[in-house]
Length: 122
Image (cartoon, rainbow, N blue to C red):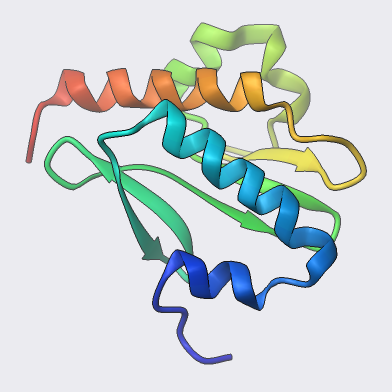
């Protein structure tokens, strides 16, 4: 598979039945972090904030959508609300068979923005 150069290119590469959900994820993340910059990292859409610090990335898979990372601060702040979606260290998975919980995604991104802000710019 050729390298993906932009988020729009990533979206265009998705099957129609997956694209709408990933576009929802993109809009939700960008709304929660309006100062962040979209990039491609590890062949998936990602955002950077506060001087280029990694904020989150996301991707579509066969049976789920993933949001990375679920940092310790995210897990600590959201507790039982995030636990059903955790899949290993740093990965949040949303089943493709259900709507993406956009309010939860917003909370995750805002926590990550605050986390990056606390570290300052690189």
